[in-house]
Image (cartoon, rainbow, N blue to C red; front, side):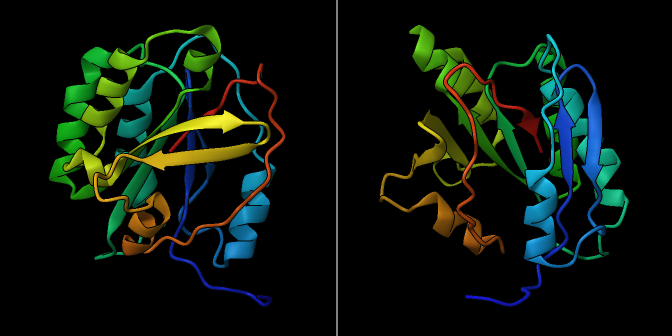
Length: 188
C-alpha cells in the first residue's frame, strides 16, 4: 500500500537513568512521519532502568502535552531489564489506573536468554506493569537476528498485533539493526 495514512497521536518517551521526550503526541500526524522519526531515535546509555520514573513522566507530562481531550490513553512500556526504582512502581501504576491509561508491557528477553539468566522476577515485574488481564496486555519478546519476534501470552493464541489493533494501533514491520550484544533502549 502506498500513500499517507493518518495515525492517532503517538509520542515516545525514552527512559533509563533519565527520561527524555523523543517526540510529543501532537508532533506527527501520519504513520510515515512517526516511523521515519522513530527510526532516527538513538539509544541513550546509562547504568539504570528507572521504569517507574518513565511511566510517571509519560503519565504526568506526555499525555498532557498534545494529547486530545477524551482520547483513549494507551501506554506501551518496552524494557529489557528489571527496574532500579521498583519501590516506586506501585504508585506509578496506581496513578496510571486513576488516569485511565491502558498499559501494554513488552519484556525483551534477549539479555536474559544470551546469559542464561532466569527471567522470572523480570517477567513478574512486567506483568505487574501491564494492565489486567495479563494474557491480553503482556508480551515476552526475543531478538532473533535483526528482527523483533514477539510471542503473546494469550491462551487462545490471539496475536499481539490483533490485540494492539483492538486498541487502535497498526503494526509495521520495521527492520532493526541490532546485534546480540546491543541492549534495547527503553521506550514508552
